[in-house]
Image (cartoon, rainbow, N blue to C red; front, side, top):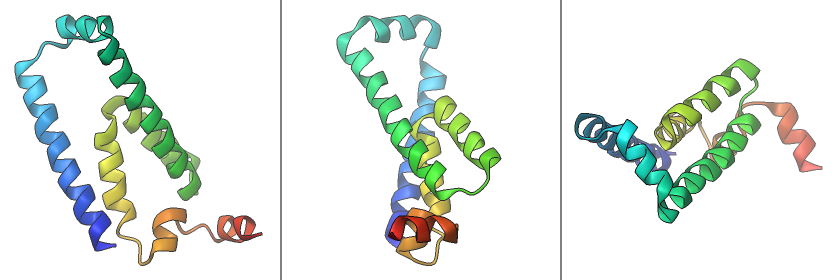
Length: 114
């Protein structure tokens, strides 16, 4: 899955740089209230968390360990789609598309094929 890995790596770097610039130049305590006061700011937060819910569902489908699922979900809540990008890089180390999308849990693959 080289394309997914490259895309995941590129988006991870973009998110890390953007996060670093925001932390270095912004003030979350004062700017956060401004974001919530704007219709597009609220829409952006809704978009962020809807996307995180979708990726979180994929993670829950792929992973076998509840602890790993909860850890990734915490990462999504705290770091947003930076965690998504990192997860794509991890998942892209899979040998094929089936494993990329479904993980290595054979019982899931069989139950969904029916």
